[in-house]
Image 1 (cartoon, rainbow, N blue to C red):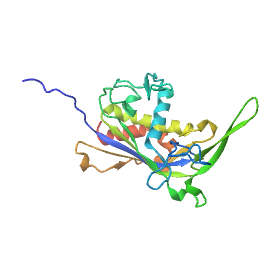
Image 2 (cartoon, rainbow, N blue to C red):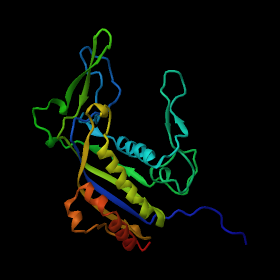
Image 3 (cartoon, rainbow, N blue to C red):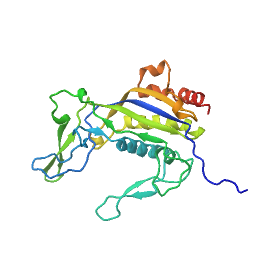
Image 4 (tube, helix red, strand yellow):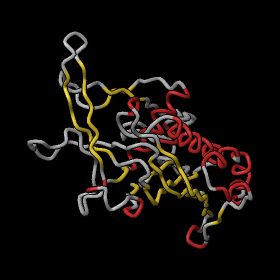
Length: 267
């Protein structure tokens, strides 16, 4: 009798981190202009096409986390993505098929790269909490003027950039981490580090000029797992320090979180 062939992929659990994102400074996550308008904003923000409110795409937050994590781990930039023509900018990132890779295992790869399990990290789109902004803020945004100055003639080239004002709250934040092996329990700590890197850097564009500083607040950590996934309710991470519900506290509790996950999942 021939041995059964094929790979086995087992989902042990899903860890869910929820909370909110607070814009400490104006936030600009841009999109292309739908039309050319006289006097219009040069750099608009991305908006929900249904109600026209700004939001944070999950791809923007996840992409920023991945980019910073690649830098921290020193991952080789070995894959060029995008169109290969003279007008397109060359964009490089790290991609590989190493099952132990600290980047690709968590953040995923393209479809042409073989891997041992699906992507571990999922980041949902984060809508704007409209009540976090006063009614005086028109269309939920502000227009920030910037100008490039000619170093010889001092001539200015002004442009308008649209931003969601400081103080805006985006919620609910929902980050889902899937556990397919015992090693993934330890990898979850890298997700918290990725968020910490974003807090210390910026989200969106124009960060070196003051935009994009964010803070993660009201964080709650839960897990649901087991072979009979549907029969298990979410278990919350109960820790007196964790009641502070901020990112710095969760990062300081990485060891306790790993122990809690292993005990909850028998891994």
